[in-house]
Length: 281
Length: 281
Image (cartoon, rainbow over all chains, first blue to last red; front, side):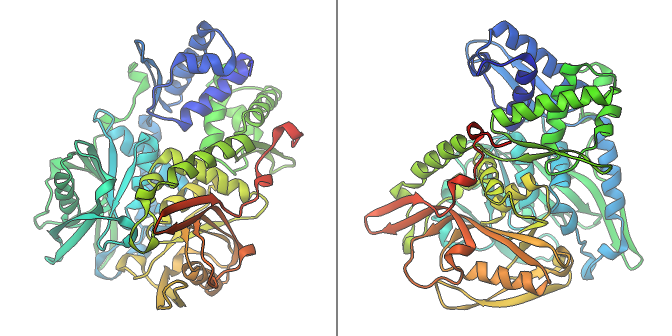
C-alpha cells in the first residue's frame, strides 16, 4: 500500500507492538508502505520519542546490514510503582487467606490487564539478560510465564509433575519440595528446549523454593543456562530456602497468620525500571 | 502532555491495542493529550481506516454519554488464510505422531507469535457472541485460552482434574472421557466464575469431546451460559462424540495412522473473517 505518514505511524506502532524484540529492517517498512527509507527513518524517530515519553519501552536502532528497528517493551518507573501499589492493596485482603497460610490469587492472575503489567515489569527487571525461553511448572505459573514470554517474544516451556502422552519423550528430575520435605518429580518434553538456551524461570509463588530448584536442575539436564528466576509473590519464611535471595526476584512479600495477611514489596530493584526524566536514552 | 498529532496517533494506537474491547471515552484522550475533542475525533478516523485497511480489526464508535471508541481485534481473510495454510504444513509432519495416534503440538503452541494469530482467529470467529470469560482445562489448553482471553480482554478460568489448596472452595463435576470411557472429575474454584457469565470454552485438541462436555456441565453448575466451544485441532474420529458438530469450531482436522499424519482444515467458517474489500464497515 502507498501510505501517508499518519497511516504509517498507526500501522508501524501496531506492527512493532505485535512483534516485540524482533529486528525489523527499514526496507520492510519501506516496501510495506511504498515509501522512501528517509521517510521511514523520520517515522521511526517519532515512534521512538513517543514510546520513550509515554514509558512504553525502547525502540532500538540496530545498525549494519542485518539492522533495523527493534521494539523492547518495558515499563516506566511511575507506572510500575502505581501498578505495584494497587496490586499490593488488592492482595492485602484477609479473605484471600486459605487454610495452611496459602493465598488465593487466581482472580488477579487470570485477568489479561494485570498479567500484561506483570509481564512488562518482569521483562523490564531482566532487560539486561539474554533470554531465549521462559520456563515454568504447571499450573499456576503458566499465565505469568506466557505473559512474560509474549513480551520477550520467546517460546515458553511448561514442565509438569506428571508426563502426558502428548509430551512425547521426556526428561525428568527429582527434587525435594522446600516446604514439605517430600520427594517430587518434574518432567519436561525432550523436544521443548534446545541445548545452550538461556532460560528465565517464572512462577507465581515462592514458598520453600523446591519447585524453582527442580526447574533449575531440569535446565542443567537440558544443557541450558538459568538467566534468572522471577516470582510474583514470595512467602515470608524464616526457614532455609532451596534457592538463595540473590538468585531470584519477587514483586511482593506475603505474610499470613491467624490475624490475616500482610503484603509488602518484594526484593526487586526499582532502579531497573525506565526513568525517562533522568535522560535514559 | 500536550501532544502533536503524530505522537497522538502512535500513543492512541498503543493504548487501544493494549486495552481491546474496552470503551475509551473521547475525553480520556482529549485530557491525555491536552487536545480538542474535534482533533481526537479526526485522529480516531485515521486509526479506524488504518486498522480496517491493514486488517487489524475494527475501531467501533459507541455513541452516547457512556460512549467512546472501542478496538475490537480481529483478522482479515487473507492473513487468516495464509497463517492457517502455514500452520497446516507445520502440523502435517510425520515426526509429530506419538504412540496411540496422539500429536505433538507443544512446539507450536508455546510460541507467542503463533498463539497471537490463533487468538485473533478464534476471537474473530466468535465476534458476534457476548463473551464474559474464557474457560479451559489444565494444562495444554491454557496458552490458547489465555491468548483468546487477552484479545477479548476478559478473565480466563482454568478447571483442573485435581483441586489444589490454592483454589479455595471448589465445585466439581464427573464426566465420561469420550475416547477412553473412563469416569473423570473436573474441579473449578468457586470464586472464579460469577453467575450468569457467558463463557467461551477453548481447548487445544478435541478427541472424544469428554473434556468439553465436562466443561459444559461445569458452566451449568455455575449458572452460566456456554457462548461457544473452540479447538485448535480435532481428531478425525468416526465414533460418537460427546459434543455435536454444530456446537464447536475447529481450525484443523487431524488424521493419524500407521503411515503418518494428514491435516485438513477444520469446520470453521471462512466467511466470519473480515473482508474489507467487500466494503464491511
